[in-house]
Amino acid sequence: MQAQPLSSLDQWDDFVASRYREGKSEEEFRQYSPETNPGVAEFYRQNHAGQTVDFVRAKRAEYLSLQRGRKSIWEAAEYLNALVDDSDPDTDLSQIDHLLQTSEAIRKDGHPRWMVLAGLLHDLGKCLCLYGEPQWAVVGDTFPVGCAWSDQIVYREYFSANPDRDVAEYQTEYGIYEPHCGLDKVMLSWGHDEYIYHVTKPYMPEPAQYMLRYHSFYPAHKHGAYRHLMNQHDEEMFEWVRKFNPYDLYSKGAERPKLSEIKPYYEDLVAEYFPAQIDW
Ligand SMILES: [Fe+2]
Ligand SMILES: [Fe+2]
Image (tube, rainbow, N blue to C red; front, side):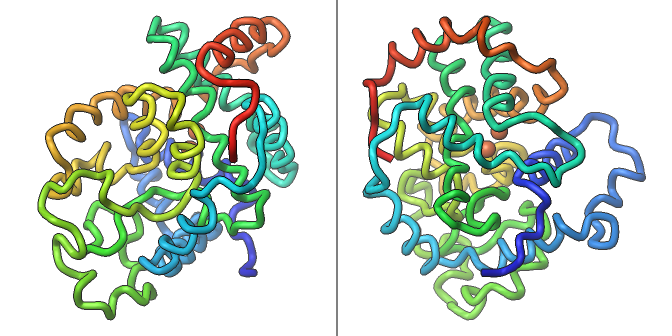
C-alpha cells in the first residue's frame, strides 16, 4: 500500500474548513502550494490518480452489498473511535467528538431531529479506513467519474495521472451519463459519503440521505458545478446539503461534548429511526 500522506483523516477536514473560511488572506492561498502543505497535496495527488471508473465500480461491488456484519450505530461509533491518531498535534478530539459537535450545533439551531441524527452519522463511513482502505479512498472532495472533471475540483491538475484521461468517452462533458439524468445515476469518487448513505438509506428521510451522500461533493454544493447532470429534484434537495455543510465545517471549535449528559437524548434519537443493529 502507498504511504499514508495525512497525519490523520482530520487533516483533510481541516484543510477544507480553512479553504472556505471567511475573509481569506493572501497567506491562506499559499496553503495550496505543495511546499506549504505537502501531506495534503500528496493526498490529492493519490486521490486524483486513483479514482477511476473501474476503481469506483470495484469498490461499490465490494462494499455496497453490506457484507461486513451487523452493528448498532453506537457500536459503529465506538469502532470508528479506534481511528484516533496521536500523530495529529492539532486535535485531541475523537471521531465521536466531531460527530457530536456537528449534531449538537444542528440541535442548538432548532433543526429537525432527523437532521441532528444526520450530523451524528455523517462520518461513520470513515470506518472504511479500518477495513484497510487508503486515505485517498475514504476522504477527499468527491466528484463524478466517467465524465469530464470540472475546473472547480481542487488540485484539478493532478488528474493528469488518472488513467481515465485516455478514455475518450470519459472526457466529454456528459461522459457515460445523459443530460440532467439525476445524481442517483452518477457515480461519484469512492469514499465515506457513499458508504454511509447506503448503510443508513432504509432508515433516514430523503433530505438526510442527500446530506450524507453529498456532504463532500464541494464542486457541486459550494461551486455549482455539474448542474448539467443534476435534475430538478437534486436542485431542490441540495438546499439541504448546503444547510448541513456549515455544521460539518465550522463546529470544530465548539467545546467538547459531554457524552454522559447528552447520551439519553441521542439514545432516544437513534432508537427512533434505527433498529438495534443494521448491516454494514
Ligand atoms: Fe465527512
Ligand atoms: Fe465531518
